[in-house]
Length: 182
Image (tube, rainbow, N blue to C red; front, side, top):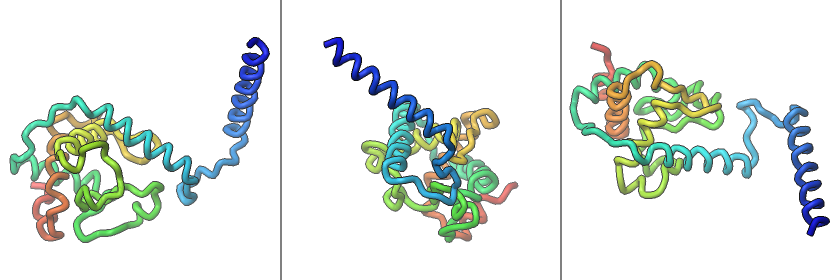
């Protein structure tokens, strides 16, 4: 038994030393113009999806159907989000082409996204709303998604979520009207 534990300990120590050596070697291609291998991409996407779903599960969603929320959230979306997450009629821009992974096109419906928002999210709009609120408030590490919680109160963030609920239905002309600052 002691010999078995000794072999496991040595194997783990060697694995840790090799991992540290790999990290400090700098050989992993970290540029945004390189793509992750399938395993790395799966690990990062799964970690992101499950972490957001867990963190957002107990958030209470307020009523989001107030037209003033739509106007307020639309102006903020246009100023802070459209550069990465696009506007109706856009399929890409310089930012989406230069970021990896590419930010989701929020002008698409949930069914059109290839991102998994967690169990039951396509059936329950409040799941997506909670997760959108959490992501806007806290951001996502090492992804380019900023945390707006330090600069925006919850009401302002919920206004952006309210706008996101309507965004996929908007034409380019409607978008221009709704997002104009008063």
